[in-house]
Amino acid sequence: MASLITRLDASAPDFASRLSSLLAFEASEDEAIDRAAAQILASVKASGDTAVLEATNRFDRLQASSVADLELSQQALQQALDSLTPERRLALETAAQRVRAYHERQKQECGSAGFSYTEADGTVLGQKVTPLDRVGIYVPGGKAAYPSSVLMNAIPAKVAGVGEIIMVVPTPDGVQNPLVLAAAAIAGVDRVFTIGGAQAVGALAYGTATIPQVDKIVGPGNAYVAAAKRRVFGTVGIDMIAGPSEILVLCDGSTDPDWVAMDLFSQAEHDELAQSILLCPDEAYIEAVQASIIKLLPQMPRQEVIRTSLANRGALIKVEDMQQACEIANSIAAEHLEISAEQPQQWADQIRHAGAMFLGRYSSEALGDYCAGPNHVLPTSRTARFSSPLGVYDFQKRSSMIYVSEQGAQTLGKVAAELAYGEGLQAHARSAELRLK
Image (cartoon, rainbow, N blue to C red; front, side):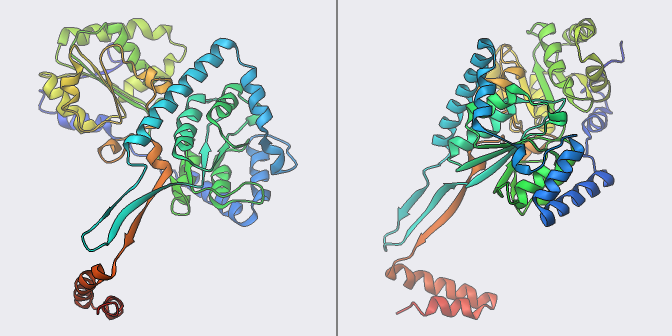
């Protein structure tokens, strides 16, 4: 059990190289998967509904006679919602309300109203913000069922003002998850098709006779879905190519070690490639967390997945102080960052790179996954250094607005013409000069 999770010391000479090795993760470039996804996409692009139906019947073991048969009605979504126990329905509705409230506030704060200003000569410059017309949401099915992802992807799109939301979700052997469908009803999804895999991505990207083409595809999926999203980017927008889930806990040693151990488990249980790391300046506390891991692991239904994740990509790291912990955290740029400390804000002020920050010992990452309000679709694999959580802004686009007055054209025309001649673009220059008096 002692080797269940790696122990590192930030003061060791080889720490940087060992940490780099631990963090190393490259998305699968399996040629067979990429080739299969490419073939399915080409087939969908060429044959539309026929290809989607054939792939869906084959991979999900269905016997649908048309793609139209694979669409669920709004009545079916409402029935799924009505079938929930009162406790589960209340939980789902509460989570949806909190997610919606957060993203409504985000919309207000992110310049969604656009802007304009008028210069002295009457020239008006500005920016217009408009929502996307139609987006597609991919929701995993089969063994994995994530109603929370339905809320996190659909609600900000609705708040942004997206005209139509198309959801695709695979239903292997025809098994539908009521909680996923109920979440779609609550979130206001407009149409739902029971298809998945690369064929669903292709249908959303290219459009078919039955499934309308979307402007952007968001939501997680398996390796085939990820490969397909990479290939259709440019035809449509995508949110991101997400890697394995990550949690990084900065702890000053004041939190119950069982809590921290379970927080590490909460990401490790996703899959064997998930990453869970603790940074702490207290050696005795690290020992206590390791003891908690050993004690609590046998109680976990997914203990084998957790065990593999912790053994291959987990670590308990002794740092000199919380200042050094923050420096290492900025280098890691984790998807989820918990600052479990007496005064978390002072350390949060030093963090520049993280997908989401959870401040204080009561702010478990699990609350962010389901109902805190901020989006749980987050950048992974150090991409938090240059990208952001999914939000209202992902479902909007911005257009520059330029109105040049007659007076303004006299000034700007001379500047533009001079630069255009410098670039050797005479038509550009003449276009500006023709408006000069």
